[in-house]
Image (cartoon, rainbow, N blue to C red; front, side, top):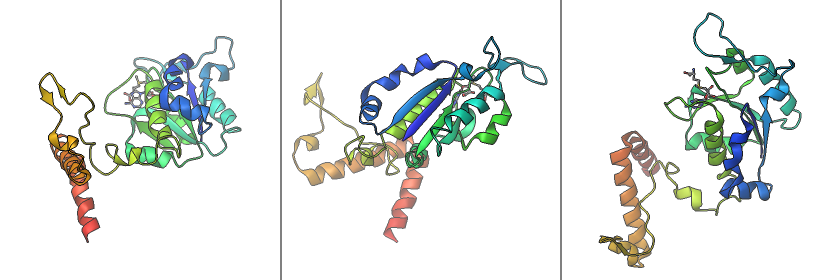
Length: 232
Ligand SMILES: C[S@@+](CC[C@H](N)C(=O)[O-])C[C@H]1O[C@@H](n2cnc3c(N)ncnc32)[C@H](O)[C@@H]1O
């Protein structure tokens, strides 16, 4: 997969150079390129924003450099789906990450200030929000999307790892423990020390169901529906 990022703050993307994403880049499973939106301006001040029509607060990212950047990048990332990060977008989730991981490429536009000129939507495939809150720019959302998508690419994680992650089976993950078995009088549940794999699997499922029911009832409802479907 090839991922291109369009931003006015390329220096923010250093966190992509560690851990799993870094290893995926080294293995050439994914190629990531960060583009500075200012390099697609034509004036000597490299102006990327302007005041909003109709008046009001803040600045809006202009459409000309964004169109120029996307058109340029499409020469290299021909089938890349264009994503606009925006709080007004469709809510990002694990299902969306899974779908995007099947694409050949992604081109992610990071907004800033009051957002981007609405006409940019005409060249966008997905408008994505990472949650119901407003961040300063689209750089953190882009990194969230990239991290989630890259760990789902074939060969990036051990085969079974993402299968039991939260959300993959309409359940949150079960509680995990590691050594020591007792820490400040808090004991690891007996069953996990038993070596009985059947009982461990049963306990984990029960815990995942309990946690999901308490913390995310809307996901738990979907889980029950899915169970019903599977039992038909
Ligand atoms: C300050 S925000 C603009 C908010 C915009 N005025 C609104 O209320 O919808 C600037 C940029 O940050 C990014 N952004 C902020 N919050 C986001 C979120 N929850 N999901 C995705 N992108 C977000 C977008 O790229 C947005 O254009």
